[in-house]
Image (cartoon, rainbow, N blue to C red):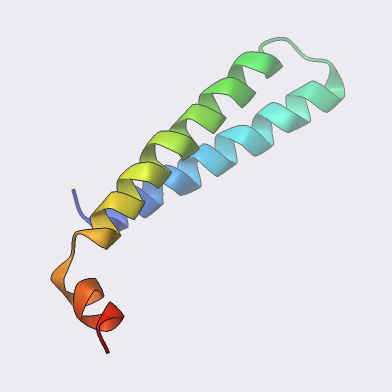
Length: 65
């Protein structure tokens, strides 16, 4: 999985959370589920993104400057 794919999933999670928030404000059904799913998407793919960044060689070279 490339970093572009991980960033796309995180953006999808933010969009899902924003829509869930709008549902919550309007008191529409499934708002809590949308907020939960959006948060889980952000946490999972955010942690995968951090792992991917920390395991790349160029990042390790940057830390040793």
